[in-house]
Image 1 (cartoon, one colour):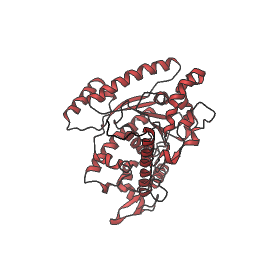
Image 2 (tube, helix red, strand yellow; image 1 turned 45 degrees about the vertical axis):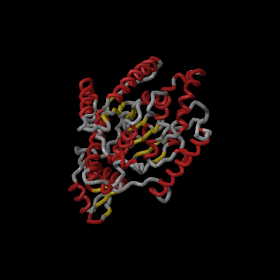
Image 3 (cartoon, one colour; image 1 turned 135 degrees about the horizontal axis):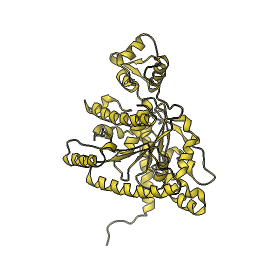
Image 4 (cartoon, rainbow, N blue to C red; image 1 turned 90 degrees about the horizontal axis):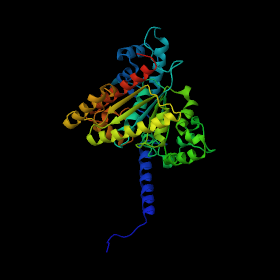
Length: 395
């Protein structure tokens, strides 16, 4: 006879889910008073110079001559700029620089197409959401106009930007690609973030409805049979507002992922260099290839400017991981980003407060830990930025 008392599963998990949500909201209220919305720390002169692509002495010269926005002065005489001031500086330098000088505002030019990057992996835990969040924020810090799309019903990317879907009741991309009369324009469901130049379409559990809607719509007419075009159509409405769209795809090969990939101009596949992860990725690629071939025959455009593999959670001292990396490089070295994302406690520690490396304070980490992590993350993101600019014909 069982010694465990019987309980109703739905009652138990609903109560536990509600309790977790309540506690998370309490933490959010404590971390981001007074309205539970994320703010953004100021940036040092060295950081601003790094993302603007100028020298610190150049910034100091501007400050001493009263040109551009005036920074705050912190303890010890350190000069700090807000992210908004960083944008002001970028536009000031672009306006006052010589014609042949480097352009500091890297917006799209006439004829440059919107870059849509789908960050994908079939297996959870590969660092997909971490990659998407840092890439979107990096691109905004370097002067691009960015839209982040959270396509994962679990809404981790949204959470990293301060949203708690079950409490905030934000609409999701589902509202812009659904098949009924309640469909809305994408512009109506975009929200700003704490990063100037970075907007987001948050996710919620309602996104999962799309996986059920598509098969039904396919039975009732041509609109359902061309489900893969719906995201591209939605993005067309806001095309002129952005330079880059970063999509965090769900960790499964469903209709949401296929819709994202069809709209994409580029694909970034995150890979943890271990045998089981590589086997999973192999199955993902085979299934994806067969499905995209089918939808291409149905009229989908699945041409990409580039595809790259990003090695994540990499430990250079781990011999089996080095062997896996060598194995991958022997097959498609040109399509693996030169900069891997190393495993670091800085990222996991920052995530404890739903923050990224670009948001946390360097002083919160042990000496060298933050510097190594941000150097590695920037190397990855600048490499991806280079691919974006190359697609625009800039070398």
